[in-house]
Length: 461
Ligand SMILES: Cc1ncc(COP(=O)(O)O)c(C=O)c1O
Image 1 (cartoon, rainbow, N blue to C red):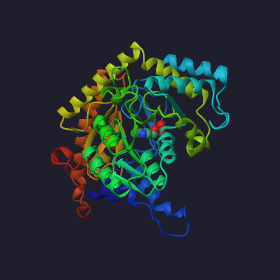
Image 2: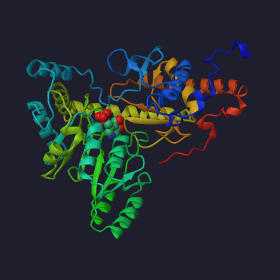
Image 3: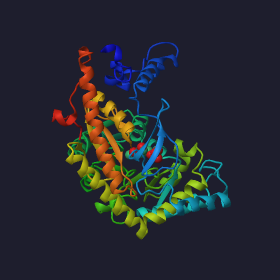
Image 4: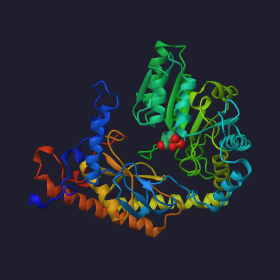
């Protein structure tokens, strides 16, 4: 029997059970050679068709599409792996706005915003965005990553303190750890945890600057903090609140102002930031506030802005047009379709026994379980006609690997139904696959149970 089992059917144990954090070898003089184990591990995974990362799309982004894996396999199907929430990436009005901007301004901003990289379009965008968000002004960045990392580094000095939600995005975590050693991670969504930490810091350091950092919709869990309560806590202890609204601005809320609008806080969070890359069909990020000194502070003292080329005129034109759509009746209709699609996908997957995390949003996190079942289920989803992204440890807790499905306004009912059918079949095939190989390598501890069968999951939320 063993002779008939190919490497794909019988992947090396390491390809199914270990995680990326274990693959880097920090020893050795050669800094590049330290990555050899990492390379071998991903190649082993690719050979076993269980490396779903670094996929390449082969056409327009849309509710269905075609992509190539790193190993060179081409898969097509319904697309729940792209962050194009309002389906604007090929919208005719946006494409026309991009073309007009190219004709008028060329394609390049050719400088840092601190020098002459600002364009008529970036100036217009900063004004329009500030008005939309209810702030005095805003500053646009080349990426959301740069905005999050950069604002933290600009505001916080080594003697200051940061209190950050333990699941906040990597850009915020890295910004925090590079700004000061005084970083306190608090339990996810816990305002009580923030209050306790602020009380301790204030007791020891009455004069310290403190930045509290969280998000509106968390990107791996689709859950939302109580920002009204958090703002009160920050006011009580004289801390500054920074909120990242990457995943909901434009996509949620009656007028597209997201969770901030739903919680009645438009223009009230001390510093709001986010990304254009989810709903606004472009690279780019922003920081907005009412403080009159922040804009120039960022221009002169924020590394990722001061020493980096500005957003191009084409990107600004795209975001401006996307902002028009977000604020229009059409945008309202797109948000309604997006919301309906998210509810439909959540209900269908839940009905099939998947554990779905969080609240309805464009992100639908469907728990799969440990790395073995998740990697195989992802392989069979891709082969079965659904393009999906899988998140595994250390991005999420060890046995709570998941598909981070992303819904678009333009997904049809048929496409959502297809995603659900493929998900059910892929999970079942993965379970059978694991059952068929578990006896071969009992020492590996390969689980043959799906998350649903295990019943209890340890999910950090
Ligand atoms: C919460 C959050 N903040 C910031 C970013 C970074 O945004 P960008 O893709 O524009 O760099 C992301 C994207 O992954 C995100 O999910």
